[in-house]
Amino acid sequence: MNRKEIAEIRRRLNPERSNVTLIRGCYVNQNREIISQFAQSPLAMPPEEAEKYLALFSKTLSGTPDKNLVNIGFSAEQVREGEEHRLLMALRDSALTDDDAVQAFCEHVIETFDLEDNYLILLMHDAYDVPSFSTDREKLEDGSDVFHYILCCVCPVKQSKPALRWDAAENGFRPRPLDWVVASPEVGFMFPAFDDRASNIYNAVYYLRDPGNTHDALSGALFNAQEKPMPAEEQKEAFQSILEDSLEEECSYEVVQAVHEQLSERIREQQADKEAAPLKVSRNEMRDMLRDSGVSPERVEAFAAQYDEKLGAGVDLSPVNIVEPRRFSVKLPDVVIKIAPERADLIETRVIDGKKYLLIRAEEGVEVNGVNIAITDPEESPF
Image (cartoon, rainbow, N blue to C red):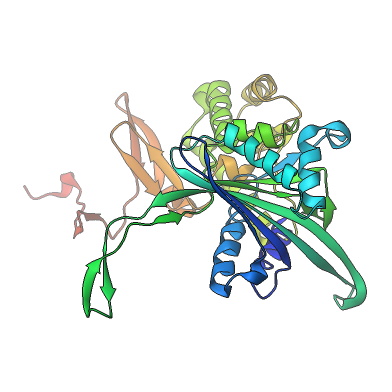
């Protein structure tokens, strides 16, 4: 799903636009025991309550594709015979009215989801009349297809903090009773995917609030995916390791800066096109970037060899998992320097009298603890 398709589904998740037929919930305590279960139509809820539920589901379609929103692919064999896929289809096709399927699904989550807090498993079914448009973007009256899908989110339930509240009846502040409050989703998914504005039962979209915690046991139980991509943090660590080990003495500030800028530019271009698919870069593309950054042919080929060894020749990486376009930093054991990426040229590396230095060009506006300081040439000092 591209960003435009994700946004199209998210726009439905408000009481005025949604056609959500059923919401089901399963409240679980820290001991993996079910406290309560419910099934309710949003139409039977007060508007403000329905809005809160839909807001939680909306968060499972937020974040960065390939980082917070990970594509999960099912093989043809899984679609034909896989138990995990069969269960997802049963949930979708029954519009969550199959009690046995819902119970089996909740049991899978309870067995594999690891969280110290109580949590709430939420499921919803929606039927979206997908409008069709002519080539000149005119909406076609008879050109819609119905897209049936489910959304799931698993939300921590935490006890609120003690506080004072205003009591109008008593005209004073009183202690607020402690409550159990549903927090933002930790994980979630959408099935099937909405690819090319149509149903794709070979894909699901897996949401991670924290890309560093992929909840592998849970995703294995729900999807058993054979085409699961490498987690964001692992991509970043693997890329950094390959770059350092293969370039050796040629892994300079200038090379890392140049790679960061080339990848950042690709990210900016992709983000400007909301219909573009999630961005990927291949080993050969990375090899070309290094060559363009002045790395010698020998080190470029060493990079390619290590890439094949550690990742695989056919494995592509996601630039959003490797660099952050709006951040550029230089870290020493006792110092961290943060620089606007477009001004990374202000820093140079030098070896002076056998010692290594980072030089930062400081022309004006230098502050130390909020105090503007002057920088003078010792040789021009009158003392």
